[in-house]
Length: 459
Image (cartoon, rainbow, N blue to C red):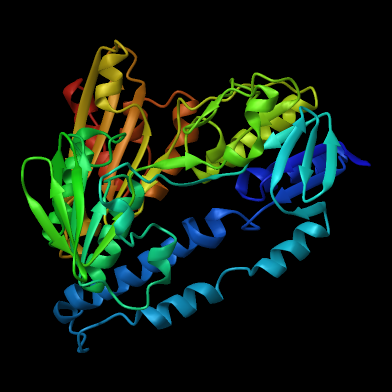
């Protein structure tokens, strides 16, 4: 016998929980939420939060070892105890029983693998759940590239790397996106010899090129080698306890560990989407600007859908989907999307890169200011960093902002609303900034644009 609901949500991560909450709160919906593996989803359990816990530990180790002596602080060299760090990391996250309890108080929480019976019905371990509205928010997982010999390697990803109890002697990171860069720096600061191999001409492929180059220089200063290739890893070979990686161009690296960070694939294979005609691929389920799939009554959000793979956008997509389900149609808009890579320095961006703006046909100007000239940065031995503003020549409207510094994520996050409201480069030059702060680097960059236009500024 079918159990009837107003909404069925497949998955229990950021998108799923936001959708279920909004539907219940705003529409008094009777919601079933189905999860096969990880209640709460990846972000709080194995991704965003635990990764940032390791990043903060790595930053402390680095700062003690590079900054303490010149501040007159006498301490021995800091070293990481991964076993204790892992215990702390686990202590600050909610356990699975608690997730089930919390979600079960609000929704019908169903554990198991869901498979579509028809477009309004899913089967979970013998139970049949039915609703006019179904949201697929099953998340994603690490993409495993088809590299010969990889099957013989006990590779790591962002989940298993957080379970290590000993620091790898040497680590090869495959991929130079946010995950690869963050983990490379974490383990380099913990004491690993780290090499990143990336297919492409720059790290952080979606970032502004100059910002990416500045971050790459900062990583190089810490001894992290980045190899950019037209191909990548061509072959893995076991050599006793070590791993040999043959790289395009003829070089061979020998390492103790390999971490895969070259992308994500959607968790959708077991859903039986073909049987109901949902358009999808390994990249995810195809959706329109309302998060609708090509099948009436089925929406998708988060890593399961084609689109930005970020926790905030997963939540955003879920809310758009629920609005659409209940008759409040609105469209997704990613034109002003703040993003950050949580390395040290961070790389924060909002709006268009210089290359994107040029490709979009804008008649643009660019102003930049180096981090080394910002007072706040002079309290640190690290001076790698950049403030860059891309703006329209005629209207002076800011098209994009790119920051490489500590606190860059906070800086670009606060600019998103201002850009939505039509922020100009002259606004940025004239507004008050906190001194000394990292954000004042943007004011200094903006002042160059206003000065070039012939304006007289009072500082």
